[in-house]
Amino acid sequence: MKIAVCVSHVPDTATKIKIGADGRSIDPAGVTYIINPYDEFAVEEALKTKELTGSEVVVISLGSDANKETLRKALAMGADQGVLLKKDGYYDSFSVAYALAKEIQDQNCDLVFFGKQSVDFDNTITGQLTAEILGYNCISVVVSFKLEGNKITAEREIEGGREVVETELPAIITAQKGLNEPRYASLKGIMASKKKVIEEKVTKADHNLTEIIKLTLPTTKQPGRIIGTDASAVPELVRLLREEAKVI
Image 1 (spheres, rainbow, N blue to C red):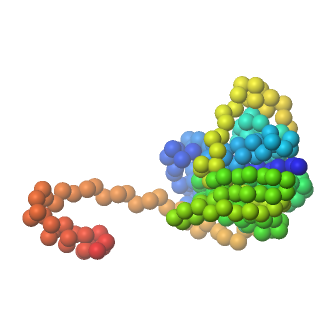
Image 2 (cartoon, rainbow, N blue to C red):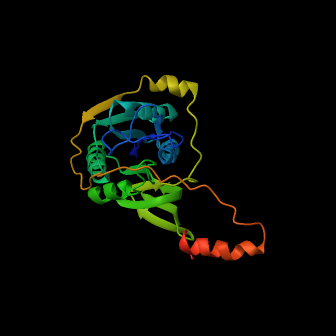
Image 3 (tube, helix red, strand yellow):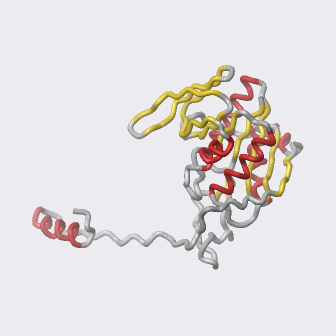
């Protein structure tokens, strides 16, 4: 069996983001990029499954040459092969899903892991879209995964609790925090990753159904105010909550 893991190259959440001159993208100057944190759980689960089944793991990423850094990290963790679908510019979740679906099909992968979402756009739909395009079963927001033969048993988070789901291969799994504890790449793994192949393929990724019109930074928070220190301040506090904050 061949397992695919789809990974994103995203800005570090600790990086201070500035809007670019075009007003529709971020300014890359000084931005640190990392493997999408949720995708690390996906890579780890694929590697655990590989160790149990003797499967091969291929990591796939859509983007520019910079994405090789993220692919190399997954290879250092233990993945066998990397594929870079080269595409510059803007591409939405639909374009990403179509490009990934074609590559997954070409690789003949029956089991595919995604992170539940990327921390840049937070759309939380790419894995599900890819499953729909391929006609694969899909379980999202997974916190427990078990594969027995062709049968998958997974536990997923839902609002207010968890549910246990069963399905069969071929399937796409989107990983949530808590599914596992991603391993650190060993020195041996890092050295071995330099010899592993990252295959580059040009993709059109031209299925955009959405367009970014404008990016804006969040409004600056107003400084706090002390209305008073005893019960006499309550009427003024209620007035401000009603008229200014408009929360009551």
